[in-house]
Image 1 (cartoon, helix red, strand yellow):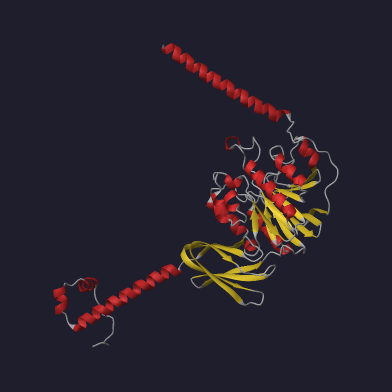
Image 2 (cartoon, rainbow, N blue to C red):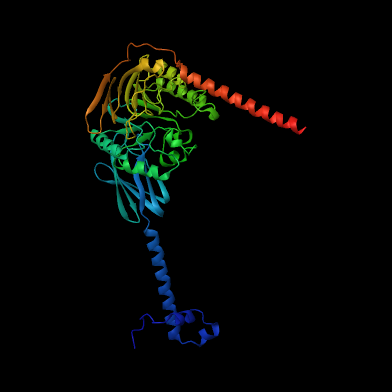
Length: 462
C-alpha cells in the first residue's frame, strides 16, 4: 500500500468516470475514493493555474524601449509587448538610487516618468514578467532660464537606407547630441507597419537614450492619409499628435516643427498654399516666442524646404506666408529635407539648411529651378550626411558631417546672413506654367468632346 497522498494512477476513462459520478454513486463511494477525487481535482486545478501563469509570463518585449517628449521634469518610456502583460519601469538617479517604480498593463505602453530635476541624468530599465530587458540613460531638459550651450543633430530622408542611417546614429551618439530632429521621410510607405519597426530598430541605440523629434514627410502619409502610424509611434508635445505640427522649448532655443503637407484645398494639394490654420498657429507661436523669457534662438523644421536646387526645387511659392514670418521674427535657421543632398541657402538674412542625406539615394542638383531658388543657393553637395548643431550664447555652429565622420562644410555665425538678391516668390519658369495651362485646356476640350458626343446620341434617339 502506497503513501496516503500518492497521486492515483487512473486511465483516461476512469478519470472521466470519477469526475461525473451521479449523487447516488458518490454517496456509495468510500471516504478513501472521495479523498482521492478531491486531491485529483485539486492537482488538476493547480496544473491549469500554472499553465495560465506560464502563458501570461511568456509575454516578451517586441519593440523598444525608446524615450519621447523629454522635458524639464519628465520623460516618456515607450515599449510594446507581444501579448498583454504588466510592464515595470524602474528609474534611478546618478547615485544609482531607485527613485521610482511605475507599471503599465496591456500590449502598448507609454509610461511617463515625472517629478524629476532639470538637466539631470536618470537611468531606467524595463522589466516584463520579471525579465530585465535593459533600458538607457536620459538627461532631462535644462531650465528655461539656463543659457548653457546645447548640442543637437539634424538629418532626414532615411527611409531607404538603413545601413547609412545606422552609421549616422553611431556618429550622433558619439557627438553627445542632447536631442535629434528628423526632417521627415522616416519610412518609404506610411501604411506599412513593418517599415516603422525597421526605422525604430535602426534608431534603437539612439532613441533608448536621446529623444527624437520627427517632422511629417510626404512618405509618412503615402497610403496613410491620416498619418495613423506617425501618430501611433510618437509621443509629441504641444498637441503634435493630433495636429501634426508642434513647438517645444529646449534651453535657450525654441523649435517649431511644421507640416508641409497640409494645404487649404485637399483636392488640389500644393496648389493654394499651406494651411491657413497652421499659418495662423505659427504666427501666434512666433509672437509668443518673441515675448518668452530666455529664448535666444528660433529654429524651424519642415520637410518640404522653401528653397532648394535639388530634384523637387523649393516650395517657397506655396510657403510664402511662412517665409514672411521667418523673416519678420528673424528665425536663426530653417531645416528641411525632401531633396536628398546637403544644401545651404540664404535669403533676406535667414539661413536655410536642407538635410535630406540620411540614407535614401542621393539627388543630383537640378538645373532650371526658379529664380528664387537659384538666388538663395550657396552650397550644394551630393552626399549622405547629418548636421551637428552647437549653440553657445548668440553663436550657432552648423557642421555637415559624412557618415565616416569627415566634415563636408562648417558654418559659424552670430548674426543674420548678409547680401544676396531676393527675387519675387513666383515660379517664373515657362514650362511648369505651360504644362498646367495645357492640362487645363486639355481637360476642358475632353469635357466638351464628351458632352458633344452625348448630345449627338440623344439627337439620334429622338
